[in-house]
Amino acid sequence: MDYIDQLEKILDLIKYFVSFDTQDENSGISLELLTDLWDSFVIKAFVTEESDVFYKWFIEILDPKSKIVIDINDLIEFYTQKFESFQGELVSKEAFKCFKEMFCIINEKQ
Image 1 (cartoon, one colour):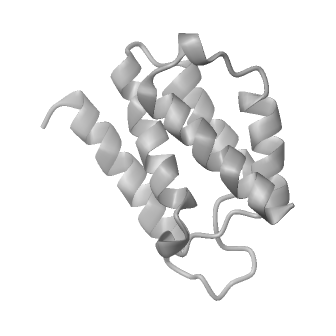
Image 2 (image 1 turned 120 degrees about the vertical axis):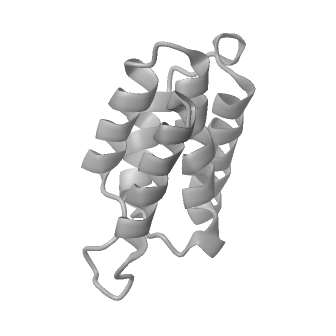
């Protein structure tokens, strides 16, 4: 198992734990967890593949079929903090897909 596969497994484990109890109003992914994951997988990434693993995972989380709760206000705050200064020419294809998905979800909910 290579390094990127290990990162995918870690994110899958996190997804499992946050989806474990969807009945609890405090379940789901918090702004704090999103920020910590962003810092670990995007800011501190050594190679693009590391951050792409996070972007792909986050797109899966944003899919309504995932049944993982992200408070819309937390999503807006995360988007504002991390993607407001988005520069398309400086990011990967996966980053752009993630940006687009969040943009669409936020605008549909408002």
